[in-house]
Length: 217
Image (cartoon, rainbow, N blue to C red):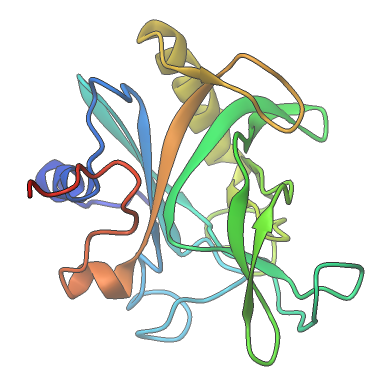
C-alpha cells in the first residue's frame, strides 16, 4: 500500500505555524493536496479524480499516514448557489469535522460551515453547510475516476477501513472536544488542516489565522 512519507517534524511545523496544539486539539488531521505532485497524473500539477493527496493523523503519542483525495471527482462550471452552482473544492484552511454517517456508513461530517471554491468563470467562493463529508471512496489507490467525491474528502476503501476507526478511537481515548454537525449534536470533533503541496514547498505553511495568537502590541 502506498504511504506518504512526510516526516513528523515537517508536520509539526505545519501545526505550529497555524497555532494548533495538542493541549487544545489532541487529535488532528493534516491533508496535503497534490502531495504526489510529481509522481501521479500530470507532473507538477494537482489532479482531480485521483488519490494523489495525503492524510496525516497526529496525536500526542503518534502519527499515521494515509493516501487520500481532497478534490472533486470531476469538473462542472456553474454560477450562484442554487441548482446551477459549480462543483465544489474545499479551500485550504482549518476545518472542523465531527463523527457521523455518510450514506449510512460511519465517517465524518461538517462541524461548522465550510468555505468551498466552486467551478465557474471565474471560480467563486461559497460558505455554508454543503455536506462536505470525509468518507470512503471506491476503487484502489491507483484508480482514476473512483474517488466518489462531489467535494468530499475521501480515501480508498482499504485505507478508510483503517483510518476511520483509528480516529474514532483516538477521539474517545483523548477526550477530544465536542461540537455539532449538520446532523448531530455533542459529537467528537477534530481540526482538519488542508494545505497545498505547491505552497508547502515554498515554505508557505499558514493556511488560517483562527488559532494564532495576535502579536503583542
